[in-house]
Image (tube, rainbow, N blue to C red; front, side):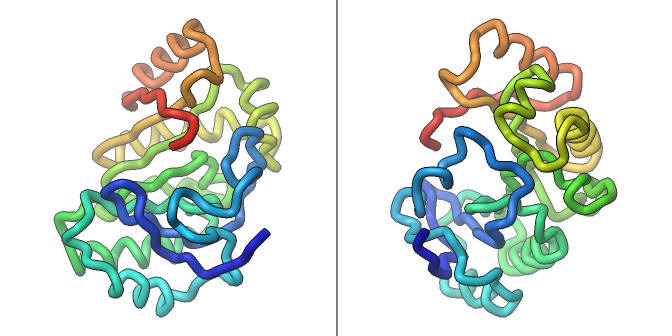
Length: 205
C-alpha cells in the first residue's frame, strides 16, 4: 500500500477531492481492494488526513474554471469527515459559486456521525450520489460488509429520502453486470419511490 498525499485529482472534467481513507464498509467490488490509484491520480492512500490548510492549498493550485463539477470521492467515505467536507464545500462555493458540488457516498453518513446529516448538506451540496448496490438488504450487507451490520441498508435508504428533501439532485447507483435485470428493475422501483434518479454505472468508473 503506497501512501502519498493526493488530495485533489482529475477524473474526466471533474475535480475530485480525497479527504480520508476511513470507511465503514469493505465492499467486495471496491477498487481500493486491488489498487493504489484511480487513473492518473497518483496514490490515493493518504499519509495522513489533510488539514483544511492543505486542502485549500491543493484547491488553490487548480484552475477551477477547467472543471464541470467538484466531487468528494477518494479512497474513503467522505462523510467520515463531515465537518471538513462542509467547510471545504463552503470554500469551493466562495471561490466559484456556479461550480456544482457532488458527494459520492455509501449513504451511511447518519450511522457514521450518529445523527441525521442531510440537513447539513443543504445549500452546499448540489448532487448526492449513493451506492444502492442491490435491492436486497441481506445481499447489501454481504456485498458491503458494513461494520454497522443489519441496520445499514435501511439507514442508507433513509438517508436517500432525507437528501431528496434537502439537496437538488439525488442519484442512486448500481454497478453494471453485477446484478440481474430483474434486480435492476427492483432498484429502479426503490429509486422511484424515494424520488431519486437511478443510474447503472460502469464497473471501472
